[in-house]
Length: 118
Image 1 (cartoon, rainbow, N blue to C red):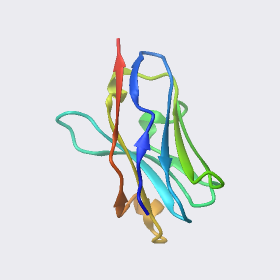
Image 2: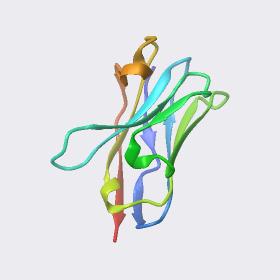
Image 3: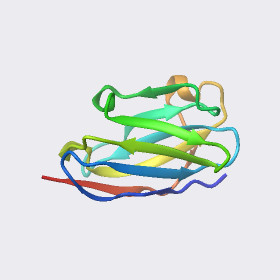
């Protein structure tokens, strides 16, 4: 499977963006982000059929992950964006049973830049 995140851009504080990740097959899918000078951070993930999601505390209530397996796409809806959300966002996938439990993913795509301006 090949992954590609898309949908990034420049948005003002409080605005919204929706990122997309093309994922074909029954993979759990995670979203991660990396800000300049910082380590990569887990954002959230979703299981293969879309009935379970987890999020890092800093995005709970603002970000929502969903998927449409008929379109082979996983989405990251980001609302109420803050300057600290500025980062390159990556999607990742895995079929191992413990992927969501440990937030460990072995297949990575290229990222998309999200910049939140104040």
